[in-house]
Length: 253
Length: 249
Image: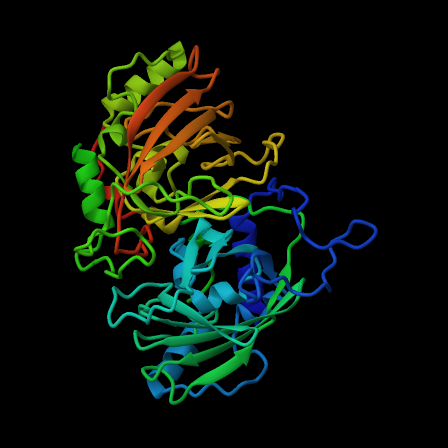
């Protein structure tokens, strides 16, 4: 754990230039208290069709799940090969994960990552643009089904539907090269991730993840992550990962 | 041209295929085909809606932004650097090392992009590098100098049916095109997007960079054609795989 913390600190230090600063600009149209501060406990806003609107800039409430999605002591039902690979990655301090080489994160480690991201919700889709890597993700909300087969990718193919006020997002189409977290929980092309986003109030989104990957785990397992806090009056900044600058700082066997 | 072919060949995995899914809500002819000559759609407030998946009509301007023969008013140092980059067949540009492109070369690369227009922001998702850009439409001013960036900071406004986007805050590392027209932190790019009809968007670009050029210069690039019934796919640039294929001095 200590080694992971060191690695994260190094990774963050290497990816954000020392002189970087977020641009301050008052977020238009958000609820404010009498003194002009964002009112984070105001009710969650709604779209014209009455569904919750998740739009805004968000940051993980706590980065603690990035090193280990199962931090809270959930028993992860590894298949033997996955347990062995996870042990090897742990012993190697997580060296070798795709994000260290500027490739990208996937759905679950982006959900746990403590850097800002913006949700842009339209009637047909939810787009997430991440500060890290300058990458994007699309979640289709127009009722389309998950495709039968797609080119396996890091971010998969996501469709979402509303269950009351909770947005339930199903994602398949993953490759087997991504890691579920920096600690190295493995995934295969059979991975099916279900995310449940609930904007509890203006300032907070709760997030629960279910990992269903019969190629790596004996049964589905579910974790509650820290969710996101609204990041008011600031903007995302450009963060282009510069290849091979982090990798030389990684320590491992 | 050779560079482009090499680049495209290495970026797209052999097994890649775009997903075919009928784009919901687009105009179609009686036989079900997309009606690309239908009028451009409008947003609820009556402005043109440029949302959709688009691709540059050709690659001509990616290689040379001034391909139509306009006189580019380079300052001497910029002229010398441009000549050096051209003689070196464009080797050394940021895109070859998986960094990214900037506003201008993303506008001219014939790879799929998606515009998502909301009342306050237009997000542009690029298939290449899986990168994005934001254009703020909420009336905010361009900020005082920000952290210089490849993509800069963009604000847009409507002039009739034309979306006029001003961008500043660029770094001096980016190249305006693959051949290597230079840019400095003084660069101010103005793009004029006009969705002529459902299927076509015209684009004019003005380069105003007084540290590299004696006066602003304007080019009409190929613009975009609408891509129906498909989706953008993930395209993560794998570091250093292109780099080794580049040829130059």
